[in-house]
Amino acid sequence: MKHARISASKVERVALCPASLRLEDGYPESTNDAAERGTYIHDVSERILLGEALTEAVFDGEDVFPIVQEYVAFIQDIAKAGTLTVEEDLTPYLSQIHPDLGGTSDAVVEMGDTLIVIDLKTGRVPVSAKNNMQLKTYALGSLIKHGADRFKNVEMLIYQPEIGVSHEILSVEELKVFGNELLLIAIEANDPFAKAIAGNKQCRYCKAKQSCPALKDKANEAAKDDFALPKSNTLAQNLELAELVGLWAETIKDHAKQTLIEGGNIEGWELKPGRKSIKWNNEVAAEAHFAGNHLYFQIKSPAAIKKLKLDIPEDLLRTDISAPSLSRKKNDLV
Image (cartoon, rainbow, N blue to C red; front, side):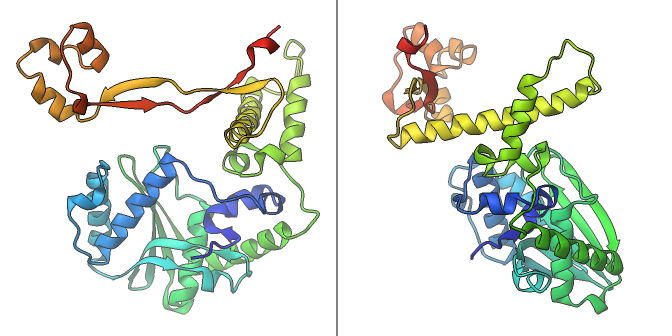
C-alpha cells in the first residue's frame, strides 16, 4: 500500500513545520528496531482479530505474546456491543479533504451513535489522546467512511501496553472543524515557500534533519550563546535548545556513518569496528547445563563462567558485534 504524502502520523509535524513536507521529499523510508517491533505487534494482532488461528511459533522468538493477547482482549471486549473494523484504510476518505492526506486506523468500533477509534502505541513513552492530531485524523477519516450523519460523538482511545489507556471524546461538529484545519495544513505544506521551523517535536522524527536550514541556524545560534551573561531565556528553554541541537548533531553523525559504510570518504574520519561480545545463545539450555554447579547461579555471564575455568559447549554461545562507531583518524588527533 502506498503511503499518503501527509499520513496521519505526519500531520502534527507538518503543522508545526510546513516546509518539512517538501524537505523530506526524496528521502527513503527509514526504520529501527522499535518501529519494526511495533509493526510486528500490529500485524499479529490484526491477524488474530480477523479470526486467523495462530500458534506461538508465529511469534518467531519475539517476547510479545502477552502484549498481543492483552491488546486483542481489550479490542474484543469493546467490540462485544458493536461492529468492529480492523486496519481500516482511510486514505480514500481523507483524500477527499486534500489529495495528500491519508492513513490507516488500527481499530474502529461502531456502537450506537458513538464511533470509537482506537490507536495502538507500542512505545514506552506515554502518549496522550488529548488534542492528538494523528488520532483526530483517524477519527475524521473513519467518520467520513462510516457516515457522519449516523453519529453524535467520536471516542478516541490510545492503548499502550504497560502504560494504560488515554481517551478523548469529540462531537461530530468539532471533528468537522478539525477537517478545515487539516485542509489549511495541507495547503500551507504544499506552498513552495513554506517556512521551515525547527523544534523538538517536529524535528525528532523528520528525515530531513541533516539538510534542514532552520535546524542548522538553531545550532549556530546556540553555539554563539554566552551562558555566562544574563539572558532572557530560562535554563529550561536552554535545555530545550540543547536537545534540539543534539538531534541535529546525531543526525549528522548517522549520515556520516552511513556514508563511510557505503564506501564514501570523509576527510579525517573513519569507522571503528564494532566490539565483539559473547552471550548465551540459549539461557534456558545454559542453566540446565550448569545446574550441578551452584556458582553458575551467582555468576551469569559467559565471561564469568570462563574465569571459573568451566568448559562451555559452543552451541550455548553466540558472538554479537556492536554497530561500528564514528572515529577521528589517529593521525588527525594532533
